[in-house]
Image (cartoon, rainbow over all chains, first blue to last red):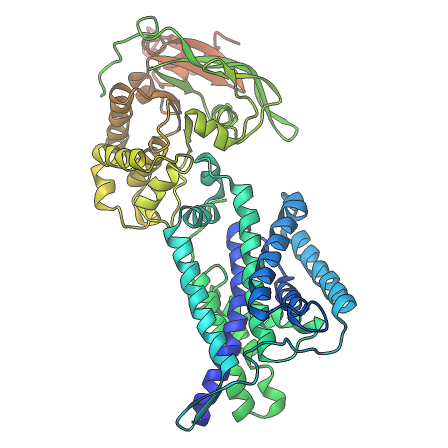
Length: 291
Length: 269
């Protein structure tokens, strides 16, 4: 029973890492840019939803705030791409890395300014509810995280494989030049990708916030999610989720069975081992790119 | 070898569907095309020959809108499309089949074809054209569900041409379709290019280094060197021209003593 509860809470955390990792990979695959502010996108999504829901701010019903927060984050991602990142075209990759790291600082600063630096909790109907199966006690919040992640994954799978726009996004990420030749509007698709990454981040943030309190620096778990994306195979969407789950599962188990000082480093130790022995990640999706 | 082209420029439709005037294109500070002018008549196969770095690919890229010209005009059916965005050019009926295939490696053959029709919204017409492409390239139908990256080079070239056809083009810009293919496959691909031209009425602008094959299939030919057009004539006349024979077909005259002459001045220099 104990083990099962560890598994569920590990999976729930892992889903959130996985969703953030998904944001990293979406953007990287489509534009070859790495968005180090992805964790702060999640934080912002969580706070936007909190700002709309909590009685001390707007006080709207939770189920109204959620879709609005997702749309706001989508619009944020879209605008950011069109106004800022598109201008970085042709600059070295490191310029985008520095830009997004700086963006993370800016987002954290503004979030602190608006919502304060004290931990706050989202007034979510899921918090505190329990689900009992015989002797097993599961938090509704954790079950919801897992269910929502499964549904979102299926939606994204359907989107990327069955819709024209989704297949075109795949096409443009595999061969941008050929996509240009076919008349696919590559630039607009890149904006859509950033919008999608913003929306996924918002979902991750809302799920994270319904599991516990949040503060502006929670975006730093983006680093763990980045590790998860590398473990899973940077450039593979299923790999990102899998990497997230692996990192999520390692944490509670190592906390339980390994001395406290060492358990913290387990995800990074795994990252290290993966980089040495399987540099393309667990689900490597390698196709040599022509230069 | 392929049958020699029979129709000539004057017999075919007299209007130029595509006309390039004094085009100049740069890669940063480096000039790639220095004032090239040429015409492609409707229904013809026109070839542009030239060595590496002559500016052939740049010419096609500039026409398809992937590169913007510095100067000059590109008239397509009387409309200047110089500097237009690639999707606009594809919608207007010009499609570029790039050098080195450039398929979408992880998408299936079928998805690749569908992407060729991205600019179109008539679902029924797209399905029809998919069948049309399969009728020209039956192997693609067999491999419809296979990832394009797993196809052989020849099959990928077929897919690239088929994907271009899916846009239902009036003019097709073909960049080195013979690149890296065996002589037998080259023959097969060029036979299909010829058939597409005759049966589907697609005007072809063909850039090639393999001058022999290209001139045999083409109606009209241009020779490009260092960004300029240096010769222009009926394909058959070019085949017979001493310069083209020596510099592009590798046929060397022997002197009366049976020795080879190693160097000859080009007449256009």
